[in-house]
Amino acid sequence: MLDSFHFILARLIREQRISRTMHRVRILVASMIGALLAIGILFFVHGAGSASPDQVSPTPTIGLGSVYSLPQPLAAYHLVATDLNGGNVALLGQATLLTGGNPHGLALQPGGRFLWVMNVGGVTVWVIDLATHHVVATIRVGPSPVHAVFSPDGGTAYVSDFGGAQVAIIDTATRRVTGMIATPDEPHGIAISPDGSTLYVACVSGGVLVTISTATRSITNTLLLIGGGAPFGITLSPDGKMVYVTDEVFDHLIAVDARSLTIVGMTQVGARPALVAWIPNTHRVIVANNAGGTVTIVDTDTMQVVATIATGSGPHGVAASPDGRWLFVANTGANTISVIDAARLTLVWQIPVGAFPVDVMATTP
Image: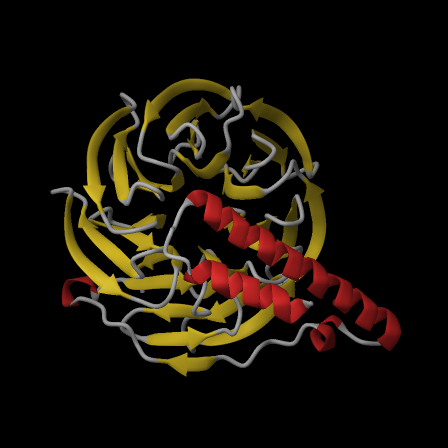
């Protein structure tokens, strides 16, 4: 049965009709795989009796693939992309790590050394040492983990388990799960307040944005999107006062007051908006329009569209360089990373990567 699900997943990913709906189907199928894996793990632990978590969930051996090129003007950055279908974590210009899984979201642990990769096709998170390009830990969470954030001190990670309707809490020192927080269905985008007291989670099928107290580990407020909307991607303003959420049903970027969790602004972007990211040193965000083949730049002061830029088929993940100079887009259908000059708002490069790149991240060494 597990082989059949892998076959279905691979076939779905190879489809060229890329859309937000199809991406959700991929994650849902991966959730079924994750559930089967979880059942198998529980059965193994029960049967083995004394088996340790490390024995049950060993750190995988990572192979190396062909290195994807990095344009020379970007040499000052570490650019990383996840290829969901190819099973690759691409460190452009450095190494391509072959995971054998379905890498999805990326999160950099404070300190800059450890990269966390969510394996949406299973129940695990991989921790990669960027200094050695080795996986140093495999952490078992819930079905289909998709995205993660960290407490300001880096001591705790929070992972949204799309297939498990929960957020996993992980101690980053021991790399062990210390708790689970139940959420509405399909928690996807996740953000944390600058002081670390509050999580914001976009629950797709639940149709709600929820806030979670990190102290009590419980939901404190809920915002239901009007008319059956589906919140998907999420980012915060640097001061933590505003939350920006994409609605994949009505093609909106929604501005939400972080304290009251009320909608204070809204603007139309492109078709089926996916992830959204804040652009440093500006008051702007970038939104990936998955079914539109574009990204939209929005001025958050006015909630007006500044520019719409064509990137290629299936844009999903977006990121900005730490200095705000460059914008990056993972195009699931085009199998490229688009690079945009943030000042001129023009497309500069299309970098070929693997198969179905879902997320992208840029850091400084």
